[in-house]
Amino acid sequence: MYESSASKLVPVKIFRKRVLKAVYISFGIFSISLSIGILGYHFWGHLKWVDSFNNAAMILSGMGPVDILQDDSAKIFSGCYALFSGVAFLIGMGVVLAPLLHRFLHKFHLDLDEEDDY
Image 1 (cartoon, rainbow, N blue to C red):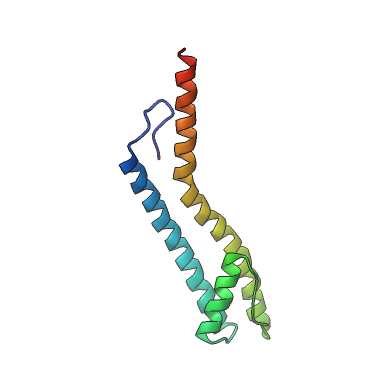
Image 2 (image 1 turned 30 degrees about the horizontal axis):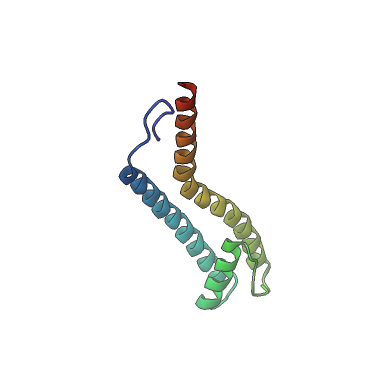
């Protein structure tokens, strides 16, 4: 996906485009995940839209649920959504951090190669 370790470091302009693309992809992942939670809490949990958003956002951010759910199907959804949210959060952050980490390691590798030349 990115340049190999033998290549030169790409210009900052290209790097910024990569980071921006990663942020957009991550925003899409978080938006879809939040939408799934809002719909699930609204229809299975019988919560109002605002309360559904609040619960979904709190679960997705790792804070935990806010409202107590009465129905067993809502509790099952909440548990599954919590597991899904943990994975979605890690994937989203991985997508954002990938170009940053790649550039850091690539620059570090190039610096080591320059030291070996002396």
